[in-house]
Length: 311
Ligand SMILES: NC(=O)c1ccc[n+]([C@@H]2O[C@H](COP(=O)([O-])OP(=O)(O)OC[C@H]3O[C@@H](n4cnc5c(N)ncnc54)[C@H](O)[C@@H]3O)[C@@H](O)[C@H]2O)c1
Image 1: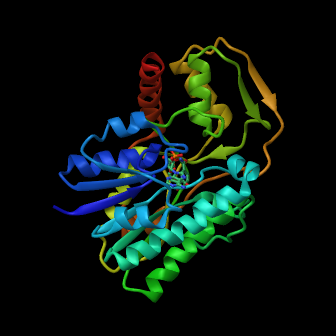
Image 2: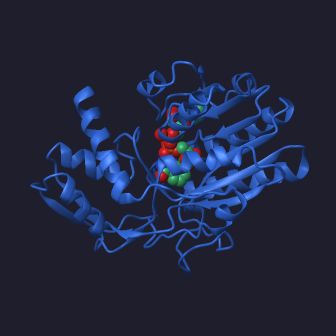
């Protein structure tokens, strides 16, 4: 039975990847320090071996990674705001933690590492859609640390006998994405609306985002793992974009919007527009996003309603 390691497997995307691997009958080891992950996500993957430790703990990382075919590396300090609040923690988890995982993968006989990167590495967009050759000028410590993590993973694939794929996610959403102060716009809006609290649109609301379903992100990870002889960076997005105002209008059809909608100043570190060109992933990974926002948003709202009842 093939073994896989998921770092950050108690998190939103990592737990969903682990669930998919387990449902195929694979063996899964998760390493997570639960800093932004949830025990309730781990309850959904009872068959996974769980190592509750930081990726900064070299011994724990070695134990988690040894003998795996592929390491899906998702553990990270996530988000622009968190990195602006605490740039040291951001850099140590995202860069040093990644080096620990790479070193353990190298010594542990791992064939491939699939690193979760971010569209945050591009910075303000010069062209739309963005392809992988777009300039890399991140606007936040998070974008810088994710870029460094991606680059060092690709450097390891040139230096050593290990393949590396960096998946540059755009705005991911879906079940298991919980609401917190550092959350993305969809969980923030949905949880606030369901709780009857006001929501805030930063700027004029005409800024656009490329929202990709977590199910499609899982598909990209599972496709990246077996690809032989493929290393490099790939955009993982829906290839479509909508404005925040349009997102609010879509939510209005799903949840009664009888609360106040406030407006706030644009947030530092946030880009104006976002749209991924996914042709490279389509061609080399056979990535083919399946979930349109029209379908993924109702699924997410239904999950959030259950989650509110549960907690
Ligand atoms: N959600 C998105 O829209 C998005 C977009 C681009 C990139 N990403 C990347 O995808 C990955 C997963 O993000 P997510 O949205 O699932 O976030 P998440 O916060 O739910 O998951 C991150 C997980 O990493 C764990 N973690 C943090 N620091 C750790 C440490 N030092 N040691 C061990 N575990 C640690 C957390 O506890 C958490 O379970 C991250 O690498 C993130 O940068 C996410």
